[in-house]
Image 1: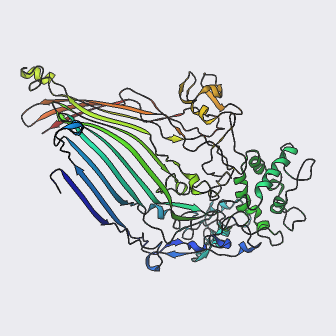
Image 2: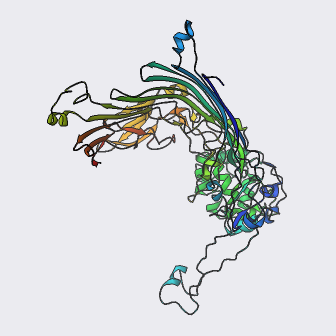
Image 3: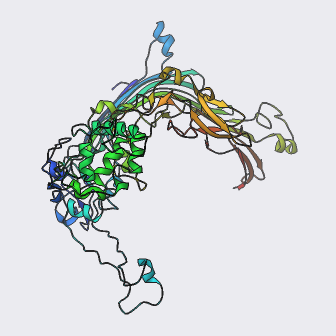
Amino acid sequence: MKSNFTLNYGVRWDYMGVPTVPNGLAIQPKYSDLYGISGFGNLFKPTAAPGTQTQGFATQQFVSGKTGIGLYRNDWNNFAPFVGFAYSPRFKSGPFHLLFGDEGKSSIRAGYSITYLHDGVTTFTNLLGTGTTNPGLIATANLSSLSGVTPHTNNLVGVLGPGGVPLDTPTFQIPITDRQNFLLNSGNGLWTVDPNLRSPYVHQYSFGIEREIMKDTALEIRYSGNRSPNSWRAQDINEVNIFENGFLQEFLNAQKNLAARGGSSFAPGCAGCVALPILDKFFGVAGTGGTAVSASSGYSSTTFISNLTANNIGTMASTLAFNSAYRTNRESVAVGLPANFFVANPNATFARVLLNDAKSNYNALEIELRRRFSHGLQFQADYTWSKAMGDAVDAQGNNQSDLVNRLSLHLPKRSDYRRSTQDQTQRFVANGIYELPFGNGHAFLNSSNRFVDRIVGGWTTGAIVTWSTGVPFFISSGRATFNCIGPLNANGSCTPANNGAQLAGISFADFKNNVGLFKTAGGVFFINPNILDITDNAAGKVATSKIKAGLITAPAPGTFGNFPINSLDGPRYFNFDFSVTKRIPITERVRFEIKATAINILNHPNFIFSTQNFDSTTFGLVTTQRGNARGINFIGQLRF
C-alpha cells in the first residue's frame, strides 16, 4: 500500500473430510442410543423400571465405507481468514523518533488468523472396535472342559486327538446390542461420535515491535496468543451417580456401622448401627426378594471395608453397578432397584461420546534479542512469559483417559478450567557461536606463519542455554470420593477424576511456601522435610516419607478435595550445552574438522517430582531425574 506499510489478507478454505474405513468394518452405536434405558439426555435420573436393563437399546453397527453411514457429518464451512500488516515508522524528530529511530530501524507488526486443527485419525481408531471399546470384530476363544482333565490348559498337553484342540467357537454377530456385548464381557463399553462434530479451530493473534538497537543487533518485543473455542473432548455419560439415588447417605451410614463393629463388618443390626436398605437389596438380604451373595461379597467384603475406610465411594458404587456378583439382584424386578440406579446405561461399563466440548487459551509476552553473524559473533536469546489455560487436560489427545477428563458431569464445565498441564510460566533459550579472533584474518596473530596459524586459527565455540520454570502439578488424594472414571482396574481399584487432596491443618499459602528443592543427606525433596515424617534405612537413606498427620487428608465422601488443581510449579529446568570446533585447512578445497560437544557440560541435575499422592510412602521425595548426565562427543570430519 505504501513503501513503509504492507498489508496481507485473504481467506483459505480448509476442508477436512470425515475419516473413512474403506472396508466399512468400523463399529459404532448411535449417539441417540448411548444413554440406553434412561433415554437420550437423561443424566442422573434413576427412575427406569426395575429389570428393564435386560433389554438391549444401543445397537452397535458397521459404519463408514460402503455402509453409507459416516462417523459424523462433513464440515463444509471451514473458512480460515487471515490479516496482517507490517509498518516501518518514519518519524524525523521528537519522542517517536527517539523510540523508533531512523527510517528502516524499526518495524511494527500485527496479525490475526483462524487455523483449523489437523489431528489425524488416531483419535478415531482408538474408539472403533478395539479391545473392550465397541467390541465385535475380535473375540477370545476359550478351552472347553474335557472329562477328567483339570485344568483346561492340560488339554494341550500330549498328542492331539482327531477332534483337535477343544476350543469354544465364538459367534460373530453384528449388529449387536449393548446388552449382548455386556453379557459377553462386563468390561465392554461404548464409544461414539456426535454426528454434528466439527473441525476444531484456533483464533491466533499477535502484535510486536522490532527495533535495531545497535549495528547488526535487533530487539523484538511481541504479544502472541490464541484461543480455541471448540476443541474435541469426550464425555462419559456413565459417570456413577451417588446423589440422586441416595447412595451417598447409604455410604455414610455404612461407615458408621463399620466403626460400630470395630472394622470387621458394616452390617446393620448392632448397637449404634443403622439400617442400609440399598445395600440390603444389592446383597440379597432376606426380605428384599433378592438372592443372597456370599459373605465375602457382602457386609464382610474386605474390598468394601477398604472402600469405606478410604472414602472411596466412587469405587464402591462402580463395583455394585457392574460386578457380576450383584447382577442378579440389580436386575431383579422383585428387588425393585431402578434399572439405571447408578449409571445411565447399565449395559456398558463406559458410554462415551466425542464432542466439541473443550476450550483453551494461551497468552504470552515474548522478548527476543538477536544478532546476525558479524565480526565472528552470532547469537539469539528468547524469553517467554506465558500462561496456558483450559477446561480439558489434553483436549486434542489421542489417549482415551486424556480425552475423558471432566471432574464431573454434575458440575458446570467452568469447574474444569485450570492451568494446562503443558503450561510453563517462564522459559529462556539462548544460542550463539563465536569465532575466536586468532590467526590470519583476525584481530590477534594476524600475521602468523602457516604453522602457527594452523594451531591458533580456525577455532569456533558454540553454546545453547535453556532455562524454564516447572510444569504444573497439585497434591492429589488418589481417592474416588466423588465418582469413578471408566471401568475398574484389574485389581478392583478405580481411576478417579482429578481429585485434589483436602487441606486440613495447613493453608494453601503455607503449603506453597514449603515447596522447593531441599537436599538432605538422605535424599532430595521437593516438599520441605520439616512438614514430613521421614524414616531412614540402615544406610542413612530415606526409606519412607509421609506428610505429617493432620496437615492433609482425604476428601469427605461426595466431595472433591480443596487443593487447587495444577496450582504449583514443579522443579525448574536448566541445561547448558557447549561445543568447540577446530578447522584445519589442508588444501584450498579440503579441510579437516574436529568437534567436541559437551551435553549438559555443567552436569546439572534436573529433577522430576512425581510423588503427588498425599498418602504415598515416598511423599515429597524426588526419585527421578529429567535429561542425562554430562556427555562429551568427539567428531572428526574430512570436508571437501
